[in-house]
Amino acid sequence: MNQLPKKFFIPWWLYVILFMEIWPMFVGPYLALTNPTFLGGPDASNLVVGSLIYLARNLAVGFAFLIAIYLKNASMLFILIFIRLFTDLIDGPAFLAFGMAANETRLIAIFVLGYYIPAVFAMRYLWKQMTQQV
Image (cartoon, one colour):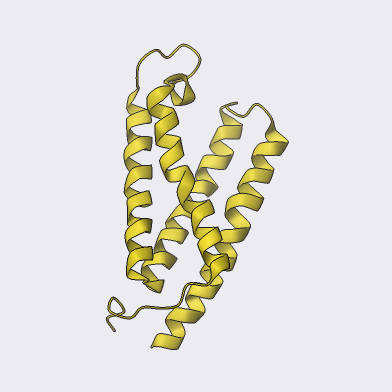
């Protein structure tokens, strides 16, 4: 069934979660562009390929989120939050594995409290919205 024309109500708390999920998609690329050591390591003076891939991935997902919010499309938001959750499940441990975190406890708290738990709540709500529309 085509769910694209079906809009759903976005409660205020979901807007807060969506903001928490979206703002790093734009802040991260800005940091990667303005500070090459952000992803290139302490010796980096120019952008590296990894930074450009990170930049492209985050901007694409960030703009897709904005489009999904504009369309108020539950299934599109569900998929995007899942993609964001999946990439964060890789990014968080990668920061730890490569020693890029100055404070491991803070990094784990940010990922768990700022991304993982809110994403699960949002996906649960969106799943209910999608199954009610069918």
